[in-house]
Image (cartoon, rainbow, N blue to C red):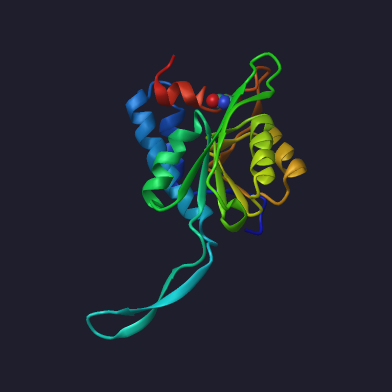
Length: 210
Ligand code: URA
């Protein structure tokens, strides 16, 4: 991907995102919309997967048909909100390997604290897509990418639903080699580290914890 940031401005993505932002949208509908948007974003982020061909016999003739090349890609969910994006992406790419990075945000310092790390083998040979709906301060995203690079990943992408300019800048500074795909670049962060206008706490909204 040549751009560091890609905002997917497709009408379906934007319409679904507006419904998700609405505070009256129920948990069930929020989750369903997230699943649908994640597939549309996954379509964009996998645009440059390497291809090869294989011989296929159609009912009419034989042809060299395009198929994905190389090792299965790896999806890495940044817990817990990442799981909301993961489900939809996995429906589109069912053979992907899956990893989890457990990070929570210390609400005082806004710094990420790691509590879990389990990723597929052979990350160095795979495209690795880290998924987390909200790129806010960028602290947890940068930390997660640091860990994935340490584990061998060298072909990474970052998939999020919303991004704040602060988080994008932080990622660009720390990981300029990791393209970001998002549905929206929002205005700013508030003093609690929430994205404005945003959609609130993505984890709470998808799991109904508040
Ligand atoms: N995490 C969220 O869930 N929402 C925000 O606005 C920022 C971080």
